[in-house]
Length: 280
Image (cartoon, rainbow, N blue to C red; front, side, top):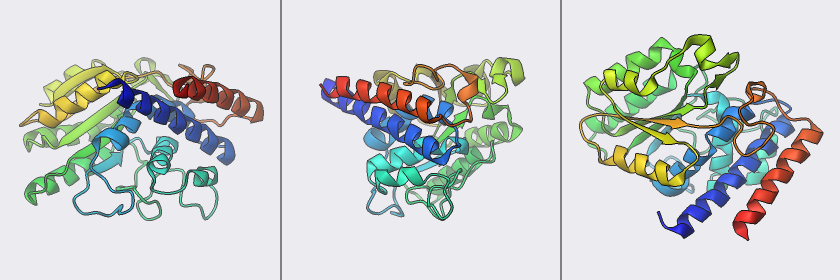
């Protein structure tokens, strides 16, 4: 990846993080921690990898994306807004009555959302169906899905993983946001799914482990997934919950609460300073 592309991705990811904070603050609810940890690879997908048309969200040959961990909708909405699917200003309506941006993604209301999600474990099954459908239909499109590391404690995830491997769905890539924290504590304390890579390998997947905040590693992983034949690919993205906002980083308390006015100003001040440095 050249320096100019990497710089622009970092700038965009910072803007995505600002949109996340803006959303949850104005809603007075939401899930900032996991949204912030996923911002870098989500930015890469929508700005440097996926074949999509913001001015034609229903384009038949587009790549598909399923947010299996649907509670981090603030991240998806901020990415979609910054990509041009709808105005960035609309992020302030998150979770408001009559808003297109509800607490979990809805394909009925929101441009760019390919699947309604939120019931943990179910999104990857839908992504598997999309990938199989594309294979049967002779479509060249690719399917991407993002799961939480706590989410993969759900049994349905492994049924889907087994089926995807059995059908050789090499057009499917799953990203596991491995920030090691879920609502009740560390995933190790709650119901450990470790070792994650080895489990996906046992289910017949190609696996890649990366730092979720390195665009070089992100690019290498998605390039490997695109070129790997015969198996789906699982990218285990080791991330920091709350990444980009110092007082939220690696704090389980920020899994599902909104900042107050003082915390909002502090978070936005940090992100604006980071943006200014990147743009300087």
